[in-house]
Length: 438
Ligand SMILES: *[C@@H]1O[C@H](CO)[C@@H](O)[C@H](O)[C@H]1NC(C)=O
Ligand SMILES: *[C@@H]1O[C@H](CO)[C@@H](O)[C@H](O)[C@H]1NC(C)=O
Ligand SMILES: *[C@@H]1O[C@H](CO)[C@@H](O)[C@H](O)[C@H]1NC(C)=O
Ligand SMILES: *[C@@H]1O[C@H](CO)[C@@H](O)[C@H](O)[C@H]1NC(C)=O
Image: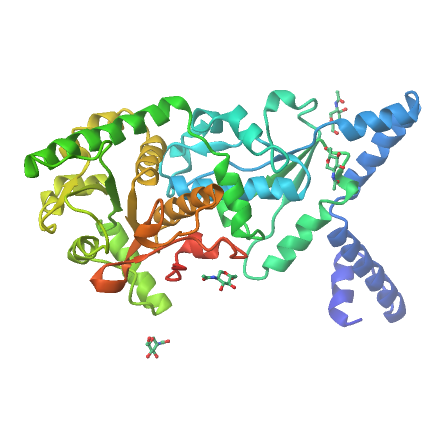
């Protein structure tokens, strides 16, 4: 061993000759290694005591069974950022719990769009947004949510700190999680993950596992009724407008609509330009004119067609998004539909959930393949079609076609888009991609 170790030891008041120094240094290294590989001595002691306790207090087999049947939980930090990052973070927390064979304690979501101010996070309980019982019944056998009232001892907690930084690789993260599957930790009723938001955790799961969790997320009735109102308004006003243009034609009832998730607000334009430079991909940003042109050229789209523009609030003041569309396309946004008030009643997260639902239920969806919001809408639609046993998932032949306007398709239209459910991780969906699988 080298001199630096000896210096280190002398620091603790030890004066050693060279041989003793070597021995002590070796012992110190052994202790350090043990501390790294066995996260906590005192906590291991804790488990030992529990076992002793069980043996001392009656027939051990009975206690053994009780111990095994006690539900074990995973607790995660509050989930933050935009609706779709929150959904991904939630799914990641669920899949982590599944990996550790634990029930996820229902996490807090965040009602406000959080950037930096922690005190503005506005925690909102998961079950204020999504149906709790329904989640558990739809996801039975896959993942489960628990309530804090089910926990018998809230101080029986082991804190798991996830590593961070460049050197905390995907493999190290996975190794750590695998270690926590070990029954050494069975003694703890709760494993609490501390540190980073789940959205920033490493990803270890295939897209179809995420899709399986998303399937179980059903909005509470109060919110889905708001989405119903917006959708009926689109169809009702759209139908009137179509009748004005074609008074002698039969109008399909309910009248179909195309939802366009139009990302042209200033923040996005700055973000997407940077992304284009960094990734050396030139097809991320689309101007208003490009979106209008491509939507107007969707092959097989029957006109007149009702177009719902899902746009950031700032753009509602910009009337120019309603003009310049090809003849036969009838564009509406919240303001023109007169539904701004419905949204205004709600916090950011709920508004976003309503908009998501309106896009999800559209007959045709057009979005940006680098937007998480658009990507999750397409994943959801693809999953629904697969569940129905649909064969055609791309283009107008599909039951719920989706397109990406940032990628050019045939006849100067947008490129048909579906989610590749065989992807081995969520990278493409959470950070965007130009692989749209059609
Ligand atoms: C997971 O936990 C349940 C009870 O909580 C238990 O029955 C099952 O054997 C466990 N599975 C594994 C692989 O540990
Ligand atoms: C709860 O758990 C803590 C930590 O394991 C333990 O010290 C305490 O005795 C437990 N309380 C009960 C009532 O079991
Ligand atoms: C960016 O892509 C273009 C063509 O797609 C290529 O010619 C150029 O070398 C690339 N630049 C970098 C820095 O990779
Ligand atoms: C889907 O993803 C799998 C795995 O990454 C890949 O092998 C396959 O070619 C992809 N399919 C399409 C249509 O992109």
